Image 1 (cartoon, rainbow, N blue to C red):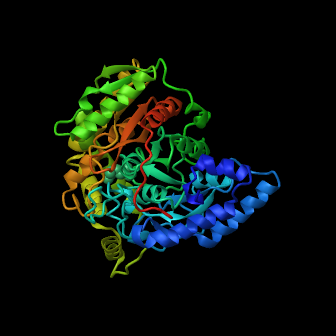
Image 2: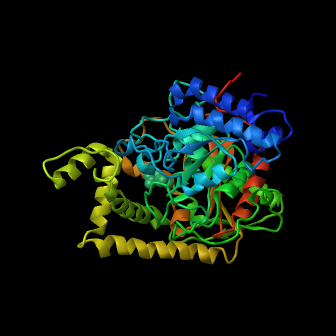
Image 3: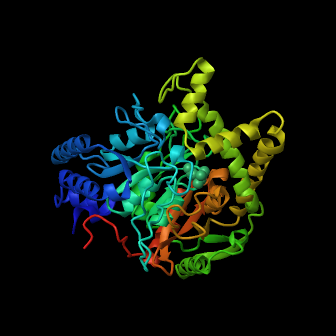
Length: 494
Ligand code: GLN
């Protein structure tokens, strides 16, 4: 077995048994990155020297009996997490040369537990997008190919496209990601891996470059549900530096994966049956419900009546917060600066040169919906709808333990497709945004393939801070689906 083929759990066990060292694991991943990154463009920055040094230190600690929970595991870090002394770009030209003097809380937690960072991975600019195509560092290619391979290059999804492509192509055992409207779950589904957006407040946002602060949620992607559970356990925890971090205990998420679903009530929201949804997506959803029923769960039809307003609501709230958050990139304090004739001219030139088209579009929409004349008509209205969407879930969860839906309305699409049609692009998030608006956890699990062999995912939604049930249901789906297909482009493919 090649070292890049281990699951994260498998690699931990193999290191504990002395079958492989972190140095060998890390070397194998760095070699895979060197071989494949020129094509996939998943990594923006490779931390070769730091990674090898950290791996050797991990091996020393293990030899001394001082192994920590993630000792020696090579991971990729979305380039939205500040890493001390390591360039952090947010996929934007405006932060192209930004080297943070501090480490984000989530990445500090991973380092505390012994993880090895391979490098920083690509993303849509400031995490705005569903295809990774808005990155100032270029597109990422999905390692999966259509079965009738006509040479079409597919998107890995976004915004965490680099994270998902790297993990699917075996360039890392797992990765950090963030989800504001679907950016963990949609790329995970497009790349045939698992990913969880935990409850808002479970993982600290401190040191994560802000997009829409009331929605942004750090979380992991990995090749198995259990691997996600292991990573989330490390990433989670109360952080006084983030005022929205919640002080609740971090349960043993990995143990929850083995619980099974017997006796659980699983909701099926009828509003998620979209007109024109591909038949394959509906069929996969039915199969997923069947698997859970076979394992002893009870399937219950539920209603989430405000679902149809979720996308418009999200595309007001998220740009509003983004326009405010991104005001800090003014050319004065950090990042790119374009000198001007006076201060205002400097701001304008810097922002015109530093931001890409999608980011500018969001800033304009956000500024508009927050402007004095439209604030009540758009922003306040969206806030009210958001409250109703959350209430829909509160009511539904009185009756069910978890909800099963498709993760995305389609499989991965071609690079370039939908790029000139923002509304078509925004439709990607139709199944995922409600969880962000409501703050609840959502897990994407690979569950099948479309007729061209591309991966399709199912989504498990749960109650706030009940990730354990979400993991239990996700792991049951994973066992039943027995998804074994591999992407065509991967490290050391036979
Ligand atoms: N695709 C959504 C957007 O463009 C979500 C992105 C995200 O979750 N970061 O806003």
